[in-house]
Every structure is written in C-alpha cells, then in structure tokens.
Image 1 (cartoon, rainbow, N blue to C red):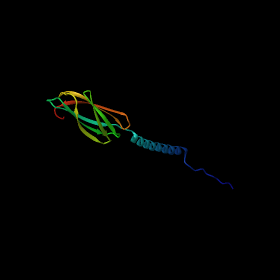
Image 2: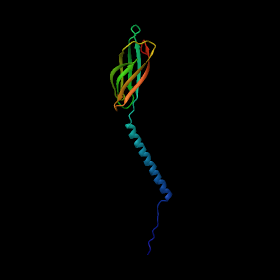
Image 3: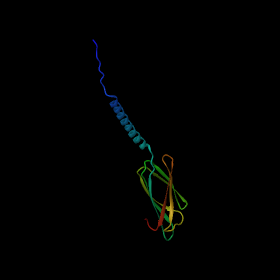
Image 4: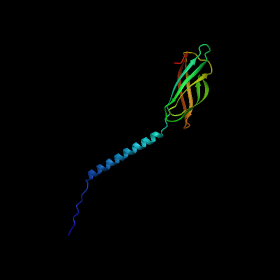
Length: 143
C-alpha cells in the first residue's frame, strides 16, 4: 500500500508578496521608532529677543529694555550684552519655555534716532556658544 502525499501550500509569488509586505511594515515601524527616539534627543536653541533702547533726551543716557523667550528645548545661559562696544555682564538662565524681561542701564551716550547693535552672548547647557545680534533703534519712549 502506497501512501500518497499531496503538497499543498501557497504559491511562490504569493509567498514573495507576503515576505515583502512584512519587510516593508517592519522597516516603516523601525523608521518611525528611530525618528521619534532621535528627534527627542536633538537639542534645539531658539531664543526670541525683543529689545528697546530708551534715551533720556536731556542727558543722552539710555536704558536697554529687553525680553528673552526660550522656545527651544535646551537651557541657555546669557552671560553678557554688548551695546555700542560696551560689554555689560549679566547672569540670565533661560530654561525651555521661560520668558525673562529686564531693564539694564547702558554706559555712554546715545542719540535718539540712531541704530545700535545689541549682542546677547552666552552658552547653552551643552557648553556650546550662543550669540544673537539685533539692530535696535534708540527712541525717546519704548516702541
């Protein structure tokens, strides 16, 4: 008595299609996982700065009024502000999401209507340098 075995299974084309579908699905899942994992590890520095130089018209002395907003995901330490070639030491720690407003007296004489370059300097929590410069119009009142 002979036992007959019949081979039943899927065709080679259907098998290839299933293996490709599984491979593509696993690749997409791995890509989504890696992108999400590494994007949260990326450190982004994004500090918005608004500044006004307000000049007393009788004495030509001025103050710098500024607002710093950290929209990034890393802490930024501002250590100095440079205005008109004069360095003003400051100590401002901006954690992510924080906004700081301050007023600082400026050394020297300023002219209403002139533009002055204001440079904010410091470093990030990762010890990378941070510098942001603005051209600010000196005015008699806050703009």
